[in-house]
Each structure stands twice: as C-alpha cells, then as structure tokens.
Length: 271
Image (cartoon, rainbow, N blue to C red; front, top):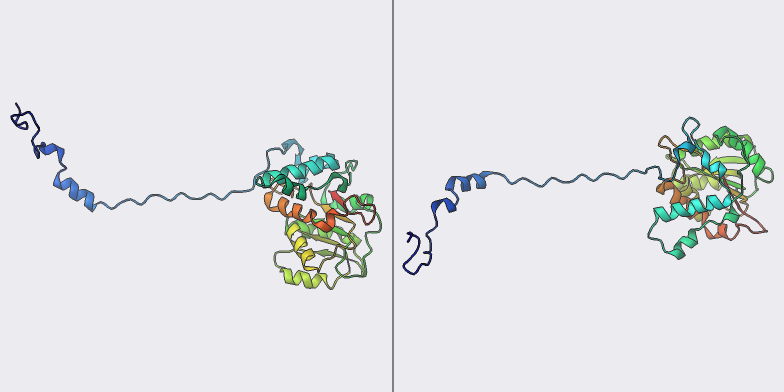
C-alpha cells in the first residue's frame, strides 16, 4: 500500500506530489510578465472595383471609353441600370426597385452612331440626336434645355469645355459642379444665368433642382456620360457612389411623368 493511501484504500487529502503544484519562481515570473494586448485588426477600406460583368475586350484604355455602351439600345441600357441598382442596393424591395426603374421608352436609341464616343465627338453627337437649336436658351434664368451628367467634377469641366461650341452671349454652357464651388455659390450662379446646357454630377444637379435654382420646365433631354471610363476602367454606371445618385436623379417624379409622353417629352441619351 502506498503512502498516499489509508487503511481503507482512500486517497489522503493534501498528499499530492510536489510536481503537481507550480514552482514559486514560475508563479513569480508569470506575475511579472506583462499581458500582451490583443492585436487590433486593421479595417480595410472597400474600394470600388470594376463590376465582374464588364468585358475587358470592350474597354479601350487608350481612348478611355467602354465601347459596349455604343452597342446598347434602350432596352439593354434600361436593364443594365436596373441590374446595377439591384446589385448596389440589394435590400430594396420589388416596389422600391420599381420606383427607381428607368423605362426603355425614355431612352433614345443611338446605337447607329459609328464614331468612337470620345470627348471631342460629343458636339457632333448631340447635333445628330438632339432636336432643336442647341445654342438657344430660355429667357427664364436657370432653365436649360439640356443637362449633361458626369461621374466626377473634373470630367464635368472637360465636358463643359467641349460643349462651349454651343455657347452664345444669350446662352451659357454652365458647369454646375466643382470641388471648390459650394452649393450656395452654385445656387446663386444658376439664378443669374440664361442657360442652354448645364453640366454637373448627379448629386449636385439633384440638389440644385431641389433648391429651385435649377428648373426642369424647359428641359428636353438628359445626356449621361456613360461611355467614359477612368484609369481604373470604371464609368458612371459602374460605381455605387455615382450610379445610385444618378438613378435617384433620373427617377425624380417630374421626370418620370414626362418619359415617353407626347407632350413635353423628356429623353435620356446615353453617350
């Protein structure tokens, strides 16, 4: 019988071997060692990527355009915008998606335009597809007949310069967005100008319309700068931060009631 057992074969209390309890030195060492703080995981900022359904064969980096846009008629463009809206806002209900849907009857078919949709070709493109004189303006201030929507302020500036061929003393091609121009300044500018063409980003145009400084009463067309791509091969329809404000703009109630209408028809033109 071992020393740790009593006469009845029970284990005696406190009879554990010395090796079972930690040595005093190791306890002291553990108390002295500082506790390591758990490493904080760095949050990676999500960057807008080129959507997977964009075929690289259609992207011309040299010209800075997505050639696929030129081959799409109204139905295909309406479907593309609807698909992107659903992708970027997956939580929307069917009713909410329907409210944001842009009907194909609103979109003018420009697929027979054969030239590359480069910046310098835009004036010729508009002469072919826009009815009426582009160099005239309403006497009412801030009432353009054409709005051109760009994905960024710098691009809006480039488009404005390209369209100055339609500017006269009585009709201003107005840049509605720049990083250094605050909304208040843009409002004051709109209220002073006889404007035939306004060029800006979706959110700025939307804000100016909400303010009333920009009027849609004389508006005949909205031109979307859809073919242009940036250095990361992304266009205005490819990024959440530009597509969603664009859809919100195009789905304004005063616009939707005029899409396809016989009187005061409002057209969408994708360049």
